[in-house]
Image (cartoon, rainbow, N blue to C red; front, side, top):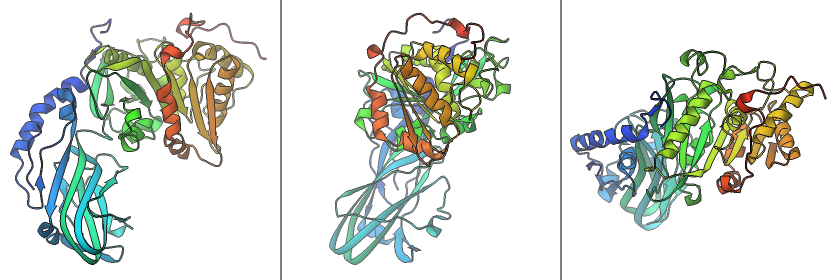
Length: 467
């Protein structure tokens, strides 16, 4: 297989060393890698297709096509899948640092009969275990394109499984796939230094990026399972960012910058709050669980500083009136902290399976509910869509905060999915295109002005009296 070449913050401590500089360095590296790849035997590759984009985007991902003749197809290994014989191509791969996804297959054939195709992917060099599974072959018409999307991250190897029946002669096969260098679910890694500590994050560019256009920025905050420093676990969680790549990547109306900053463990951040001292510590009476995402905490402040840096970079073209917050579980709790921390940043928010106050599975009552009413005064101007499963104990907080936002004149929608668990509610919320379309329709210009913060810096009145 012949492989062709790939065509300010206030403080000096705040610097961005992420995707722009990193991807720029990848240009030379990618060129060197492709120039040194040996020729293959299974098919011929055309020059990779790149979108109109700056050098950073061109280095981050492209599309590559592999073609096979009928004679090459007959040389594929014959194997058995689902009790029937099929032929399997050799591995399509460009090295373990390349992620392959969004596969498109076209088969040209003559004669009477059927042709069925299946695309398999893996991070491993051999398709271990794939043949033991029930493969979902799909019939394909001659000259028609079949699209397949993998729901798993970082797959660096792909195989074409093809079977035929009747008197069919394969003339040619074409396979095209999205190829990302160092990406996970299409997101490029980066680091942002804030208060002496680096914030790991991943950023995905819009698919058909045009430098002169302005795009929304969608922030995705993961659940507690994404906490770490590897810049990997944050992408493994049930966050909107994964759906933006897998489900909505080819949706022109949902093109955006997707940002996923990783929540650091408490022993990796200063103090453990920013700045050192107790300023970032939450009020234990009302916010006892998972303090790392408190409004004055290091993670929230570092992420907001990162967003401001990205928005200020005119080379990117981020629409400052269309910055959206999304989060699930622990990230859903973070929603209300982010909206309090910067009352003018976000045009809208989506929070799944989160809670605004108290313990995770508690229902705000008495003094806790009175305190929630005070906190809502700070972010009621931001439209919010919250969702939870009917079997999720965290639904109590989600429904309570939406009721209170509406009671104070704000716009909020609460969706509850009957009989659905905590984790399963994520696919119900993020997988509904109508919900995502609603988010992208929101514009900060159309929201009420936030006005003066009634409780600057999170300093509230004395403990509210019991209602």
